[in-house]
Image (cartoon, rainbow, N blue to C red; front, side, top):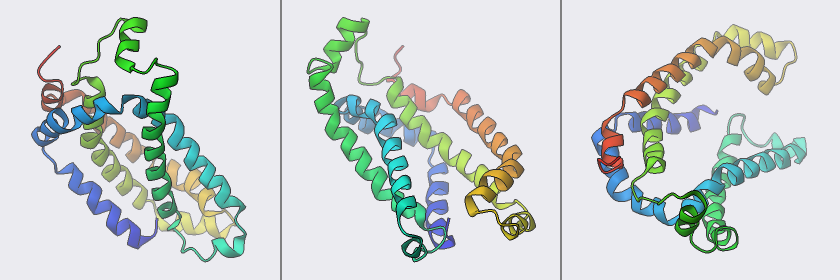
Length: 208
């Protein structure tokens, strides 16, 4: 990532890590839960639609003539994905109502009750998962990013000097070298997710 863009993204994510669990649980229970209830079909479409759009955008970017691609500063390509992800989120929410009408009989709550015997509660594990992501992802990002940044530069320079591309260097040199730190980030994030009680308690309304 370009240093200018990295200077904006990293502090923002680190500020997210400073949010207390009580605040996240309060927002999840009172603000997020009613909004999730309205867009549940769209949320289930997001893991399918957004990655497909991102992969399509990357494929189209590869088809752009090299002369045009060189005009973009190295490391700024990720900024092109931001509108793609936002457009994908909007498309998911727009298609959620269509999918609900065509596949789920016009009401996903009735479909859940008839097909699976489940009743939809406004405060549920889906809301907890979204709120828990805001608590865990900053920790994962910070530790993993530090591990990637601490990879010795002579390894990167040697790989590039031998003719490897930036992506080949990232996947075959930087990622294996930083893998212990990334694994530590995953375990620390997993530990917080398992040990978190306040978000779960408030986001579920203290219900079973």
